[in-house]
Image (cartoon, rainbow, N blue to C red):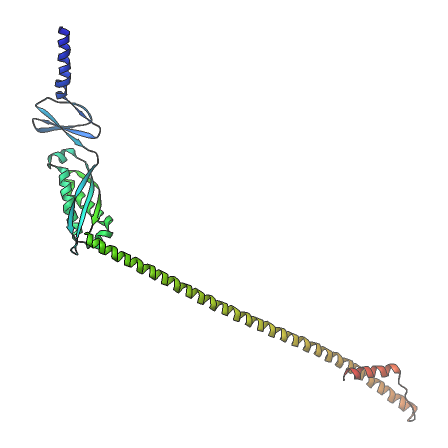
Length: 293
């Protein structure tokens, strides 16, 4: 029976008393240990022993945290109310300062994000806010990171989730967008028709140019052919005349020699001498004078 009560006491001690002395810190946390409400040291992941009623432990999550920025309405530079919300990604870099220098660091980040959203969007027109989200995110990130650095909180990213103008403004923007799309389509169609006409005109022009060039080349070749033919005929005629001239010259030289010879013979024989010409001589004379006709 005494063993039974001993077992009950041990179970009670481990179930009730021991947890009062032990705290567990996980891998993504650090612990701020306090003695009678005063910070003493920072402990890492593992088992931490405490004196109940005298020592306490504050756990701080050092992972990157996602903070939702609640939806709010902001008046833009051109007096249009837009609905905006967002997300801020932060990480605590110094648990001591984040815990003891501000009461609620994440609520402070949310309030700063809302204030900076109003400051940034209030200086921009509606069209700028809708088309420059990246620029807005960058400006918010720079501003928030600068202002939260005194709490040792690092702002990693800022993203705007919702950025919507009123419904009537959206309807008007959709109407304008549709009209612009229709206008762009008509302009594109007109440009295509214009390009087609220009292309056809250029093709017709090029065809006429090529046809004219072909006719010109044909005429040039024909003229060159006629000129070459005339030159060839003239060369043949000149050659013929040259040959005839040479033949005539040779004949007359031979005739002159023959005539001188006849004179010598006539002088030697006397005045009553008769001449008988050879048939070959007569044939040569008739051939020469016949070809000159």
